[in-house]
Amino acid sequence: MQLRIWDASDICPMLRYYFCVMASINYSVLDLATVIEGHTIADSFQNSVVNARQAEALGYTRYWFAEHHNMINVASSATSLLIGHVAAHTTSIRVGSGGIMLPNHSPLVVAEQFGTLETLYPGRIDLGLGRAPGSDQTTAFAIRGENMNAAFHFPQDVESLQHYLTGDHPNGVSAIPGEGLDIPIWILGSSLDSARLAAAKGLPYAFASHFAPAYFLQAIDLYRKSFKPSKHLQEPYVIACVNVVVADTDDEAQYLATSLQQLFRGIITGKRQLLPPPVENINNIWSAAEREAAMQMLAYSFFGSKATVQTQLTDFIIRTGINELMVTSHIYSQEARLKSYRLLAEALNA
Image (cartoon, rainbow, N blue to C red; front, side, top):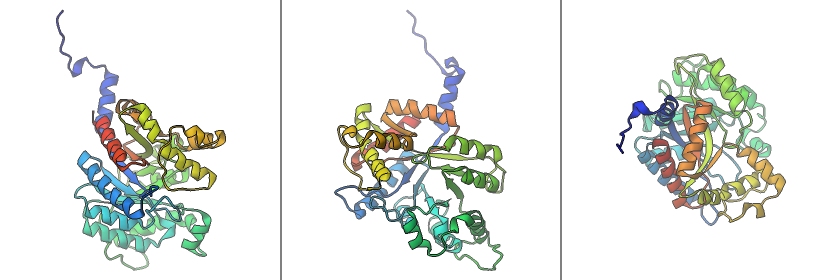
């Protein structure tokens, strides 16, 4: 029998397309500075630095933090401070917000904060903007005071922030530092309104499909169809954030993912907890109704071995046509989390 040596021309067009898609996809990390049971917030911050440094070495594109408040298991409330902390301990990976909840802040102050970050770490800072409070309404009132309608002014606040960065704000006030700096702005969201805004302003769009998947496909379709090229971006650019847990075997990944499932049970029941250790049988923890609600929120979650996740993500990326995959991995063991990020990078680069 003669051994045949195969080359790229022998691969069917669809397989070649799969390979091209996976080879060109950018991949990034969303970090909430998750507080782990039995550990401290200081441990969470140190873990973020270790995770970001490994992500940089593995070729991840960016490392983002999300603004949340009054949540026992999330320590990323002072988002810009964490961005600076991680940027100071890395050298090339982009670091930014996924996102800053703009109605909680003055656009001028945000321009100054991110102008400072961009000045300290030039060419590495991203500014992702959202309109939600990042918490419950009681906490939102504690942040915003009487200005509880601030979210309705989100489009105007985005525009005001852009003016501060370009130096042509109509009120004559300058953002120093900030003015004249090239800081990429992203619109974040989980609804059609955010898709319309990103498209109208010609900005890149990041969708929170890791916890709010309901409008994901409809929103990115609307964004692409309505997109208007701008000086910032000529073509639509979509990031999808998903939950990923990769381990040596499917069973081990499913076991590790029970920490995340318990976390979402806490969201559903209103009984939030620190990220708990995994359990052998999650069905001993949640009710059938809690499971159904959690699995709806976790629709875009990928748990398995490297081969399994590679297959799942290939299908997801091709079906959705996203430009970048952003992953969040709520794993109890720091060692297992680092391994998951490494295996994922290997899967995407295979």
